[in-house]
Image 1 (cartoon, protein in one colour):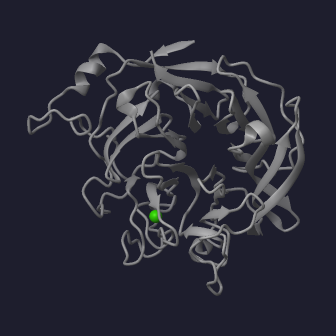
Image 2 (tube, rainbow, N blue to C red; image 1 turned 180 degrees about the vertical axis):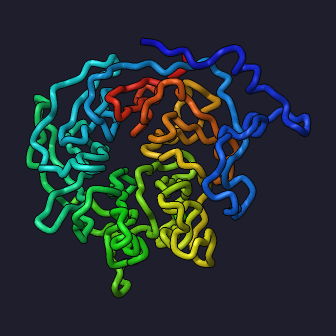
Image 3 (cartoon, helix red, strand yellow; image 1 turned 135 degrees about the vertical axis):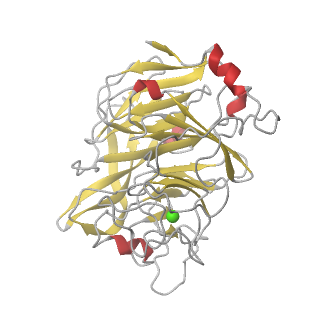
Length: 404
Ligand SMILES: [Ca+2]
């Protein structure tokens, strides 16, 4: 099924002159957000931190559904041959071709707790996968005292039917009896370390641990492929701090991506009612939750003191109110659609679109919402070996998003 997105009307809008009469690719249109904020009294820390000007892709492109046969897919990544490895939340993986052919479930993974937001989550393959066939994944691990975000690794068998010698290499303790806010993304950095995101488990009782350097909750974590703290981590040698921590003060991090030019680590996390954020992560820094936030409690109450800025706490590069629920994200580094180069693409859940952010000098200068007409909860997105974007949805679809 082919869903045409671009039209002549959109092309013309993309060339609209802004109020100053200057043609601008990123600042010519009204903000894509038209709904009232939950917190109209919360003011951004700097111009352009929210509700930036809209932008429109002028290159004709399409979002094509390749399959609808996936079951709650959560993470997607490319294999060296261009096929896609996809996790399913219930605890299995599938290999999908770019023609949409779906393999039988790959078994052999450790048990997952798939209640609530838990299950088999993010996935990456080793940079040397072609020779070692190693796979790394994040999951919610059942434990006698609750459950927690954990990291596993194992070898994809030659027949691609199972993961062999699966091993749990890291556990973001403490465990907790809940089923929300596991984080769950994973990247492999240039040094070959695993960069993992966790969540603060949502409840008021665990939330303060996002600020604790002696807890795995609400963090970005950087470990070796053996699960040990990576060398160069910011808190190595500091008393009462865990050496595997990379940044802290996070709520529930389902977005991680490296910028293709600067190499910086970018992160996205859910706020409560409003306050979803994009951050540029620097090692050792405190990203504020729950001390500062642009969101409010689901009840409508303020969070903590109800402050949005504080000395020593990092401001998000960008935030949304109301929420869009940013999940998986990727920077676009291909040439298929030149105007997308180095843009950030984010799958949104409650927003039900693929979000495109144009970023210049570490600031957001334009926002676009793609595939809104599909009414899908976009869980993760990755760039394929062919330079197309591939996105999975909670409803079980895999999309290819590319030039027509
Ligand atoms: Ca924050």
